Length: 128
Image (cartoon, rainbow, N blue to C red; front, side, top):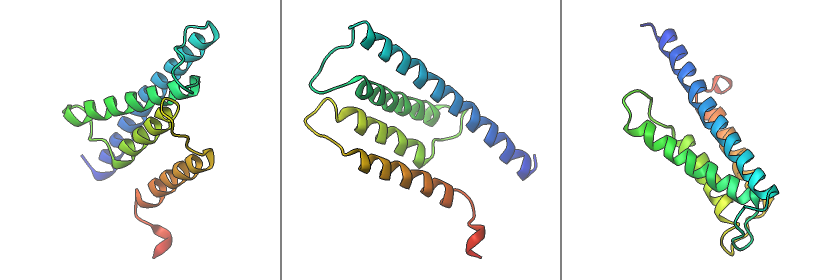
């Protein structure tokens, strides 16, 4: 297989895994909002529905990364895959403990993650 074909296959696999992750997160978020609307969402400390959503997305992301790590059928997760899962876990866990993360810090961390992934994922053409 040519290099271009291999890269194309990797992109298809990545899109497939991203669709599985975000589809699962949306199902989780809908379930949490539904439970909250019906009064079934457990109240733990200052945890809101958003805390539950982020915590679940982080756990789900970690589980997906572990499956990718031990599976022969999928490529290994990148450091950004692990980073996003940890960021989601931290945001979600903040509602369950007496630790408040300022929203501006969360936005900065997400921005750094996106820029870092975009700038260092492939060769920097603008640095030549």
